[in-house]
Image: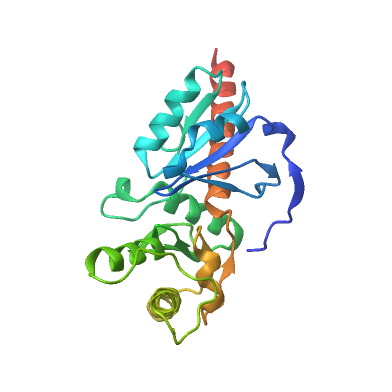
Length: 270
């Protein structure tokens, strides 16, 4: 499947739309662009406060299109903006993805994983999406556009927190960018183990998918921690930081188009 050409600039048909991806650590937002892309996303750390920064950026009369894996935060966002003359459309409640989900319990798959899968499929066809966030997730999409499932592992932040929590002497610290492979102090050693270990895990999982799956696929990387890890993977991955927001916009736009067609059809029957 050929990649779509991108045209810079906010999509004037949706100039009031703000796309919000509510995760476990951050609220990330962007604006729609022409031809289905999104502007460069901005992330707001939840623990540092997110309502006031969002209110400064999202004016009265706007439309929030929201996907969330953090119900507490997304519910508060919706409550806070009710009095601001801002409409809020929530993925799965107000609109859905038109994609077969071949899982034992389809309702269990995270919103971000489905939206990643949708956007990757529309760009590349059969895909494996690696999302490096609070957790690392792998999502497999078939050549027919079916969501087949995937895998979940601890993310970089969780790994550092677990080392600090479950050991007596290791510090609660953050990873070093481009750490030395052979660490010369505790922080370097932790960074080396977690960063290069995560990269090696991604390589290993993709190698197993290549052996197991009966079709060729494009490996796609996304997520807040992907820029820290992907450069050290031996496997070629296409890095698309905005993937879930692109999927959110695709799902919203297609839902609006279906709603418009249904309205016209009902009007025609009268």
